[in-house]
Amino acid sequence: MICARCRENIPEGEQFEHMGQVLCEDCYIEAIEPPRTCDVTAVYSAKVARRMAGQTGTDGLTELQKDIYNYVKAEGPVTHEQIMKKFKLAKWQLEKQFAVLRHCELLRGFREGGQVYVTVWEEGGPGELKMS
Ligand SMILES: [Zn+2]
Picture 1 (tube, rainbow, N blue to C red):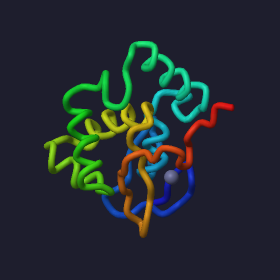
Picture 2: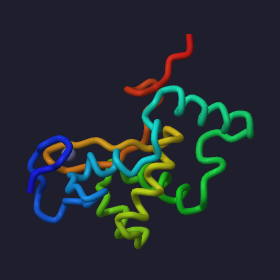
Picture 3: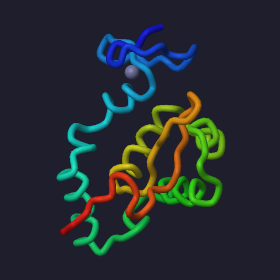
């Protein structure tokens, strides 16, 4: 199976259907996320909104999101499968939670050796917004 977006081969069982296209996991995650999530301005306004509400770190998250964050912080990097098993989540439920956590720059995903891992967002790491 070939991904309709990036044209890469999709491993068995990892294909997703979106708007009539078959996508790999990465492209699917990008496709289902709200528009502009990866936009620096959007991430910045999310951060500012949280700051103005007096929220830092895991404040303002649901209990589940906090639990996922704390789990990844303690055990990470972990795979999606580990999180789904631990919290008894379906794949789409995890994607939804992960999108929020990524939007707030608490967790991020990365790919290594064909496997997708989730880890905590490192302060000053790639993606950190430099305000100067
Ligand atoms: Zn793809």
